Amino acid sequence: MGRGLLLTLLFVPLVARADFDLYGYGPRAAAMAGAMSAEVNDYTAVFYNPAQMGGREDVNFGFQFQYAGMISEVQSTTPGRDVRCETCTPPPTVGTSVGLVLPLGGVVKNRLAFGLGVYLPGAVLLRLHAPSADTPYWYRYQTNPERLQLHLSAGVKIFDWLKVGAGIQVLANLIGDSANIGVDLFSKQVTTGEINAYLGTRVSPVFSLHSQPIKRLRLGATFRWAMQLDYRIPATVDIEGIGILGFVISGTAHFTPHTLQFGAAFDVTEDFTVSLDGQYQAWHMAPTPYVGVARSGPTLEGLGLGSALDVRSATQPAGFADTFGGRLGAEYRITERFMVRAGGFYRPTPVPRQDTAGTNLLDSTTVGASLGIGFNFPDPLEIFSRPISIDVAGQAHFLLRREAQKASTDRTPSYSYAANVIGVTAAIRYDF
Image 1 (cartoon, rainbow, N blue to C red):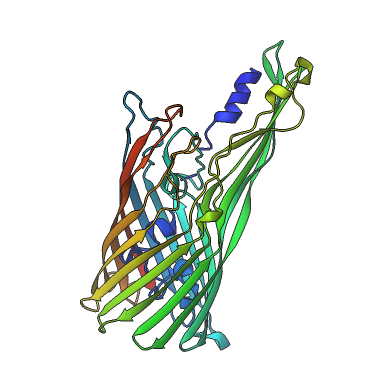
Image 2 (image 1 turned 120 degrees about the vertical axis):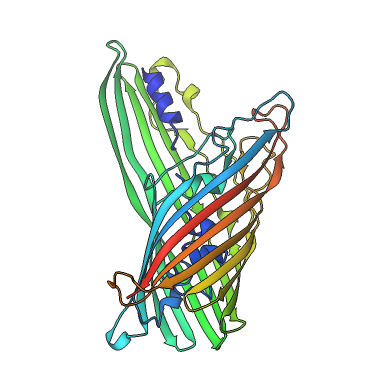
């Protein structure tokens, strides 16, 4: 019984899976490949550039639905050996988002506005997944998309040509104070059971600038502090009359690095806008995503097993590299009621080749393309006095093929991998 409980505690999967940076926040942004640092003009400014909310006159509200699914191919290149692929294809990402920009009145009218953005996963509010180091899995697509996200921010117009913004991102930490089990081997019963855990709040800041030096040119920059979810669960199994097994299960998931996104938007004509963004991400700070297990406290000294149970998980450093990617978007306003959008992006991978033992993180340099439309129309029920806007976008991510060359003694054979991701999103927006 004690062994079974211990194995359950050690190997039950901490099974966490949309990420605004990965799939975009809002169909307009998704259609323009996320090149929004200087061009964002609605509630999605709470993520892309909070400064752009400063000077806004109207309340803006949006509701969004999002779906993304991956088609993955992971193949062994070692004859006669198969790759464990329980997590080679992440489950689809389904969720909804809401956003709000609220300008204030009085002496700060047209100067100060607050914003809120929330992403709600379709199935769970938060999911953790840290597979075995012997099992390949898609690092960003498996662990990051499915989590509750909250963004709060404010934008201030300093001058007609300069705005500043600041905000916070909110995520949770899973903290376990204790998980204690008492076992009586003679009666083969669990005599006591107690667990004490909670979700703690983790907050990181966001800072942004927006400038319009000339009528047709806009410049923007946003810095988002790193964010991660830390989990720690101490666990003990007290085998009455024999001794205590004590372990600590810990790790980090949902890591996003320090990110600096900056860009420019230019109105080629009154009806045609082009936006270009660069993005730097400090991935060298990324911790290992694998679960750590270490012995803690007293153990079965009475049976002479003290040193035998001094176990600790092998930790292979993540070894990630900083990246610099680019995004390009365009919007053509055919009429006041109808517009078309397109975009493309290049995102280099921070993940090194997985040739060493003890790590099998799947990720590769990605190129993407997106298309979308937007239209607005008067409310047929005449409930709202202003036009209602609807946006729809589709996107495709192409993760370029890559290989992992493993030693013959490695428990995982050599393999190659590639994937495609297809996503769609739609939203309704309204200015009050």
